[in-house]
Image (cartoon, rainbow, N blue to C red; front, side, top):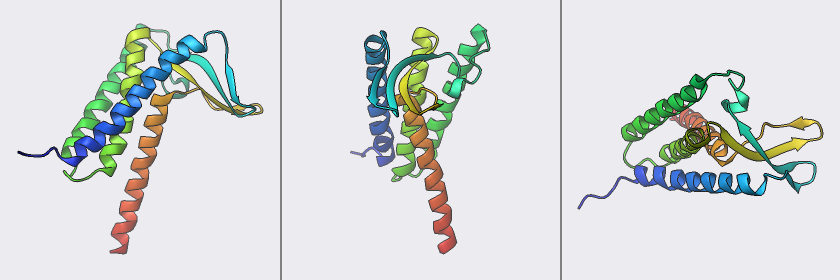
Length: 165
């Protein structure tokens, strides 16, 4: 019996974990934060319900057209297809890149679920300091960001390793 290549389990584990956490926390946030924000770390971190009709940092949020939602769903579908292609083409024993791709994939799927169900993305994590606020985000956004950072680090480490040899 052939075993499943490790790259698929390395992809699926973080993807399922992030997607489940994203969907559960968004559902909780819509119910629990409807009456107002909850400060977690005074002067730095709050849970505050927000809805984003645009992309990252509100990109295209002011584009008032039904095509906006279709654009973001289509872009996510294309990104998902590219990620699955990269996964299939990656070496069978590789686990680091597939894990990073899994984080990004889950984040994209989590936000697409919101767009399909509500036409906008649920955000609720708010980091700030005095008058400086980072845009509100969610677990899916965190998965995308962490996965992208991991991919960049892997590329940089790979390049450094090739120079040493």
